[in-house]
Amino acid sequence: MIIVKTASEIQALSGAWKKEGPVALVPTMGALHEGHLSLVRRAKQLAPRCIVSIFVNPLQFAPHEDFDKYPRAFENDLAMLKPVGVDAVFHPVASEFYPADFSTRVTVSSLNDYLCGKSRPHFFHGVATVCLKLFQSSLCDLAVFGEKDFQQMRILEKMVEDFNLPMRIVGHPIVREADGLAMSSRNQYLSTADRAMARAIPEVIFTARAKAQGEKTVGDLLTPARESLARAGLVIDYVEIASEKDLRPRTDAEFIGGIEQPHLFVAVKASATRLIDNVALGNESK
Ligand code: AMP
Image (cartoon, rainbow, N blue to C red; front, side, top):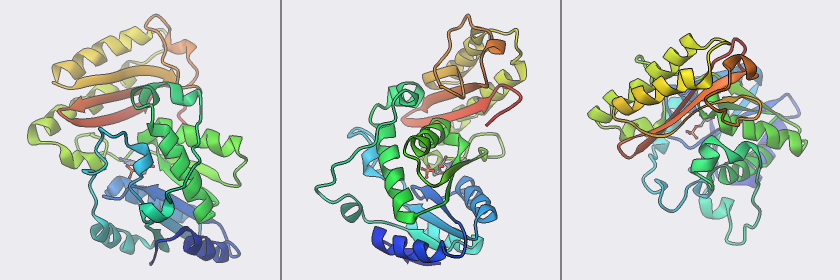
């Protein structure tokens, strides 16, 4: 497993590998867990060469957010990746990756207007910008993303389409803890009490999925979902149902049956920790 710090080095390495077959990239911010490893295993099934990037991207954090505090565990990450058989870890240094005169930002409009894009207006510009740079640095033929960050995955699919990038985005299902909580590097911030509250998130989304039928309205599902999350002690950022196609939250009166590929999205805070989750409500998910 080769560790590479500069974009030019990873480009040279990948350029040589691409002569033999496709190269897969799994972008991460490190503090790896089983969810990340499942993405890496998927990437390895899809391509003979696999690069994992580990970079806590300053562009996607607002000044008041947890950039400094975000968990960093590079040595442990390497120890987790080695047995999986990753070919290279790309671990750029922020000052080299974004030199002082770095001037370009990528904005994917429309899909950015809702859900996390509304709550964190800076966020997806930072994500799209770093991903375009990671895709171009790694010369990847495909990049694997978790459906845990469903909006992120959709935004990146749009960027790839709009810019005719010669690669594809592959989505991978959410990996959960035994009690259903979606794995996340931020789960380690949770106190015992927060962790107990967080259990309500998967309970609520799977209850909504079980109840979702065409003749139910959005409100039929969202009202009890919001009540249960609040009763558990979680502070709601948003709880919405949208089509996977456009991510635009639907009004309470709309019928689930009238929404193409309906999908439930949740963002809450357990004390200071923001947690997101989502589930497909229709039969066909992306
Ligand atoms: P992060 O390090 O949090 O930026 O995540 C890197 C990648 O791992 C993203 O594509 C995430 O969607 C994905 N990911 C994070 N947590 C999970 C999970 N529990 N299940 C599946 N993918 C995940």
